[in-house]
Amino acid sequence: MALPEKPVLSRRFRLQFEEAQQRWVLLYPEGMVQLNPSAAEILKRCDGSQTVEAIVADLETAFSAQGIGPEVSALLEEGQRRGWIG
Picture: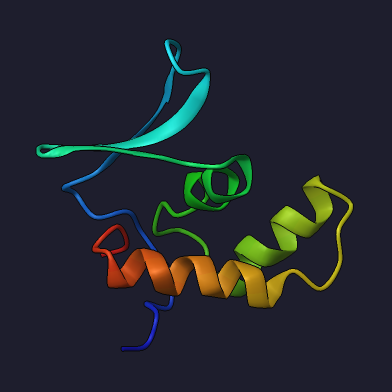
């Protein structure tokens, strides 16, 4: 299944910072997914307003990184497979 042109979090999930665990999580009715910092930064940008390419460019600028497109796409594809990306 191809990624949406402008990825957005599924309405079933809510991204929030969990103080008790000091990390970003995805909350859903059946539970919670704890995210590593990289995954959180990617998913924060999945608001339906940016293309995958724009998300990659924004991350590369924000973190002075280059060539992270494959990793970002892999996370988004896994998120889509798990139902995080709608």
